[in-house]
Amino acid sequence: MKIEFVTATDEVVTAEAEPGDNLLRVAQAAGLPLEGTCEGQMACSTCHVIVEPHWFDLLHEASEEEEDMLDLAAGVARTSRLSCQIDLTPELDGLKVRIPAESYDMSR
Image 1 (cartoon, rainbow, N blue to C red):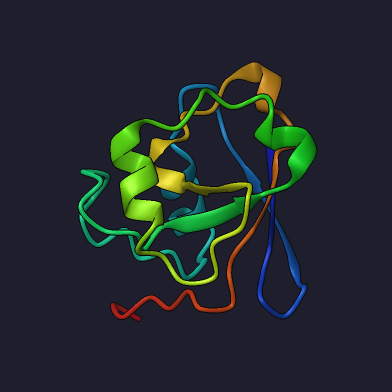
Image 2 (image 1 turned 120 degrees about the vertical axis):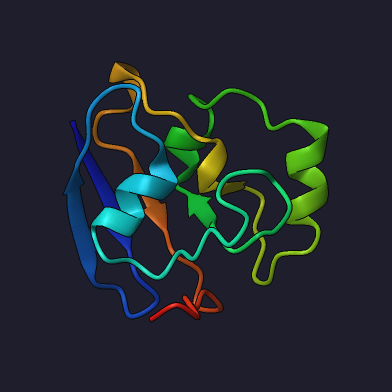
C-alpha cells in the first residue's frame, strides 16, 4: 500500500506500508519529523497529523484519550489525529496526511 505525507513545505513523500502497519512507524521509517515521544502510549501529541477529509471519514473514531491529547497539539484541525493511533488497513491504501508546520523531531 502507498501512503502520502505532505510536509510543511508542501513536499509529497510517498511511503510503502503493509496492512497492519502503524502510521507513526511508517512516517518515521520515511524520515518524516514525527517524534512520537511516548512511543504510541497517548501521553504526548508529537505524532499529530492532519488527515485529508476524504480519508478521515474512513478511520475508526478517535478515543476520548486521543481527543484529550489532540487538545494539547499545535496546529490542530478538524481532521487531526495522532498517527500512533492509526493502524493501516487495505481500505486506507492511498491515505494522504499532512505533517503540521509545528512538527519537529527533537531526536534529529
